[in-house]
Image 1 (spheres, rainbow, N blue to C red):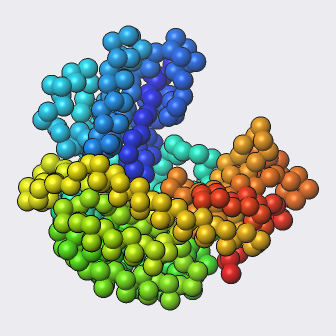
Image 2: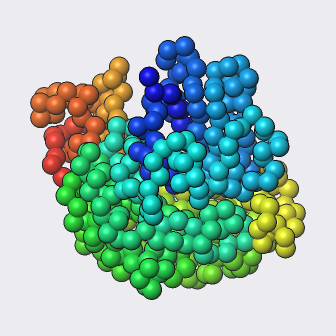
Image 3: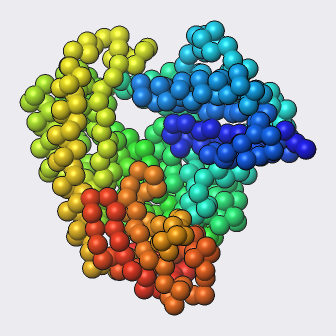
Length: 457
């Protein structure tokens, strides 16, 4: 029997893609236990190796990673784990401190050391780039994240990512197309493009912003019906992307663009490279050039320089811009960043929390109003999963991204399923009519099956 290896993936979807590229290089050596698998149900309950991919971005993420490592260290003491291998951003960032603090870990690897991890685990490490083949680790395979570049050349004052992940490096278009074809051959219908900054794509390889070129190439891959863009930086946004999005039915009219703030003073302190006027004009262009576009953004409250008037401006901007999706978090100092070295974090935690609550209350009403506006409409959805005991299909339209947005919950109707059983529905497109809405989710009834999604008007 092969030794067992259990994976634990923490942090963002970029970590998941790293592990999915790594696993094909070691799966001939190990029986891979997926996340959440109960090893007590496997043989004697012992796992030979646990591989953790960690996050070190902000305080909460670091705490979650440390807690997960310590839990495995305890399992090792109890004889339930043989080896512990830790990789990712946390071990990249604190490479000199962690080995002495948690000696139960057998090996530590940084975020950019995938080949050394493969070699340590006894796998077959390729020369050059990792293979485009991936071992899926999540869900039923209707969608997949695609990491189009690594690292970041930005120098936002609050962000430690460039210190952890290094400079920006794009993956060639032809490599990504090959990966997309491989994913499509295994039933993936939607690609979600991710990077530290997707709008920077191509500058290092092609000496120009080439996200639009990549989108057009991916649209030619048979089987891929939706392509979604995440992590788009506002400065020097490549506007050709908007024209491609408006004209191509395969590009979801959905843009994840973390703006972080709108106050000139705060944006300057953040080193974002844009001001409030630029930000408002860019949002206006997106709304005008891509009718019906849904915008997701992220905001930081309590950053140095944010006084009551700056926060009031932020609230007014959110009310004015009517972002369909918005997330927010409070500012925290991160070691080694420009902000930590040059700004005093003088805003009280209680004040930050009050501002965060006020911002999210404002957004709650906006999100609810948007969802209500869709009641009675006929939309196309992709089935991601099922709730078998309730006969519910868990779906999304082009306007919802997995894990961060709401879902469209549809009652399975065998008379309208094209002969497919409930268990066979994931990965298929449906036409549904929205019947109910709350702040996050929609409920809808089945109309029928679709070979490819139709654009919502």
